[in-house]
Length: 68
Image (cartoon, rainbow, N blue to C red; front, side, top):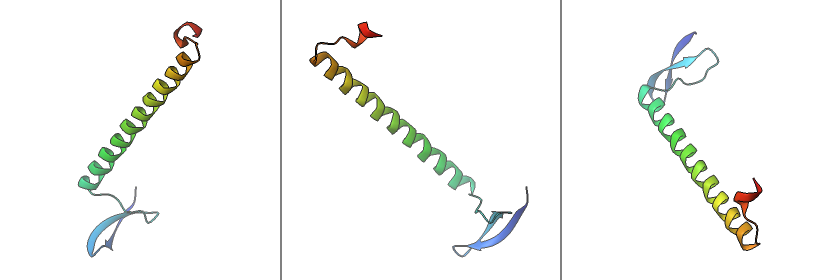
């Protein structure tokens, strides 16, 4: 993996051979934290949608637990 030094936001930073900025350890940790939070939010929304659909099926007289 070839790394190159360059200037980004007035700071000396590493770049990949393709010119992509290599995140600092702090930036990488923040990106990971943000990705985990986004995944958690997506799961929560999916669970809410399942609950809404299940409630709607019950309103229509369909027991979703029996149809599986």
